[in-house]
Image (cartoon, rainbow, N blue to C red):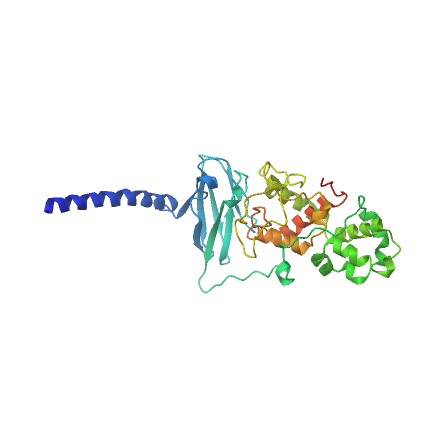
Length: 343
């Protein structure tokens, strides 16, 4: 009996060691004696980031030793001016980060490494003694109570290309509210067109001139630099699905079913998947889509994601200024285009 018991104990010991050694090895690889965190990037299908959460004290250096185990990846910190890093398979890149303010910061892959690329996100938890992170301001779409999942196609669209330059000729006829930033943020181009259509000072203008006025108003609420910045953000983060020209034909969604605005249930919470599976996003060059949504609604869709397409949430990634620039660029797809034949 004693020999049998001893044999069993020896077997249990070997099994325990077999389990413990790889775990201990991974821990040693993740944080070495110099307090350097080793981070491995892998396609989501292969496990994603080797660490999903990294903790550091505010004001203390976080040293990262990063490599890729499969394909080219990128490493970026959301809402940060920290330069992006290229992560090459088999090679290590070192970087040191210092966070002055406690909070949760998102690190993510910024290179399209596969269909589930957007799942490559992790969190850096920054803690501080007797310090608390400041809550972010409530997004405008929540303040206004906008249901970003409701159908939002434009009730009316231009019948020909618009001219903001022509619209500027009629600015003296506009009521005060039409030029207010709050009106721009909370109102879609189509709804503002319908509201202005009822103004007596504009009653004699043809519909096309009124659309030119709307285009001019939208132009006044952005800058050329914002549009350029928005184009760069779109090309880097959105074009793989939405397509370089905004037609919903990006390389990551080709062959997928077409988006149906009436067939989704993405809810009102931040999430990583909409539940319906990936589909192609709408064609932004068809003005019926973008001319029916307000900047506040677009902000909500960018921050929260969803829309029944598998679109990721960008709230932890983009700054408010980046979101404003992206919205400014998105509207350029809709102007000067006509509705496409749906037959």
